Length: 224
Image 1 (tube, rainbow, N blue to C red):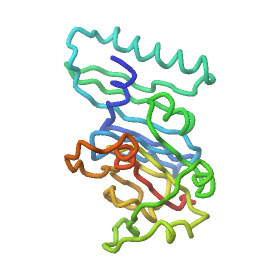
Image 2: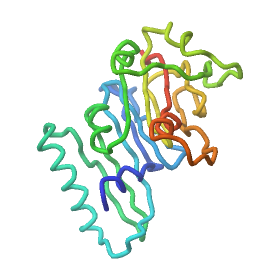
Image 3: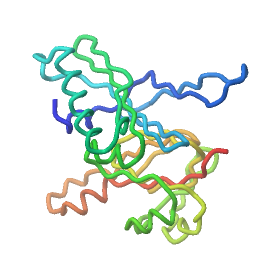
């Protein structure tokens, strides 16, 4: 299984996120992905990836596959710092693989999986080269409006956080969604399915155009 194969896996329907705190009133908060590719983003910037896929190479044993993933992680951490990437859970039931990965920051998720991924402030997103030059839809209380919103309007929300992800991917954010680019579906106030732009069947698109079709912007306010 290559790193590309690992990156293509992506949804475990038993994902769990813990609420910080030590009091008796603090409870475990469970989030379950609805789609086949999913990540959950923590307030501290950590990224948890949930993987659920069917093996097509039946000759892999559980130990062989786990060792390959661990080798990928060890190699990455040796170059980027201990615990930059870690494996939290690994199971094989028949041909079904379930894997939970944790990444220390957005850059680790992007580099390890070789995908475009940004998480940070609006101003830093612009400094990183994101132009926000696509159409958006406004989101209120988990419901997307029907009218298109320009990137110029979106950029007025300079205090907001931004995620730029590569479709297809379900994203659970630590806050409330304000806007998404139009190539996304709103599942709830804090859950977005980055579906990407539908393939129009054109064979003449450049690499840059194809990448833009899969690039999804999510603008949100951080949960207090």
